Image (cartoon, rainbow, N blue to C red; front, side, top):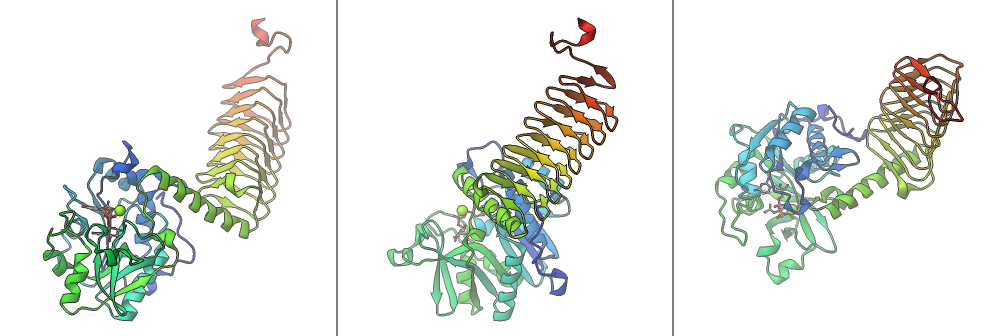
Length: 421
Ligand code: UD1
Ligand code: MG
């Protein structure tokens, strides 16, 4: 599983009665991304948007987890097979609206009893904790349907929540709303909990009698009300959790906000971050107390950094293990190990399989690939080491080239290997 880690505060889902199903809608076109890659496979803090949706849904430990796919479905299904092969998938051939999409998602689940949660695949900040709170609010109020809503200053584009005191009477889409309804600032997040039977009945009675000619899921709310069911709202304050991504401008904003939260989390855990705006930390990275991050540092993948290490400035690490007190200056490393007290850079390139022993130095313009270099070793500037093991305590000459167990010394005057003079 390469899903983003869940917030540790997520309540233990085993304690509550699980919901019958979560349906994640992910069939839409995403045309505004202008991409050959499915919108859902674009990444936020190193993980695909869809992986966040699946991860939040999984945190509820539902009896069934369905992802409804449509556009670009080969890509989406392939990705789901990698990150969460256990989820059910349903195909919506034609995008006939959110109500139709949920109907497709429930194909084969016609007999389920209990609650059905509906979420979207393109709302990466939504957490499992928030979904659990929504379900809890739904249960406590004794509702048959609960809409997650938010009050925002500019509600343009969203469905508006039309209230009847504490109840939700209906949801009206921007394109169908009257001028007074457009003034309403409480919006539909598109995330809901329904009683399964009420949902099924509502879906069976939808029509396309609206401005977009679609089967609106929101009309299930109107139908439920007409039949005397209790429909409520659960207002969420963290607006980012309802925010979808439709284009690359929103994608960048979402990445910046996610990063801001991750950086702040590590600062509060004892990491010094000199310049949060130019420090990018993906969600799976692990940092110890008293790590120092200098400007323009990117930490990606499963990178871990032990206490006292200093990274940056201008450094990118992906899947790198950094030991206690190590220093990495202006360098690039991938799938490498930098042991305690080692010094890397400026301008080093550690390629996959590079392992530096404790207190080893790989100085300026050094490249290392698939090589284990022992402790207390110096790899002097302008050297290349690949496919070899270097004993502890070695001092490699400046400009040394070691390839596949063969040592070639470069003549400092001619700048050519000595055996080619
Ligand atoms: C929908 C809601 C609106 C709400 C908004 C929140 C309806 C009718 N309207 O509007 O009240 O404020 O979300 O973002 O539900 N999808 C499918 N198949 C379809 C249509 C949509 O899978 O046939 C998926 C999309 O991929 C997307 C989600 O459903 O993830 C929402 O679809 P979208 O068309 O963006 O709905 P909105 O018009 O934004
Ligand atoms: Mg939308």
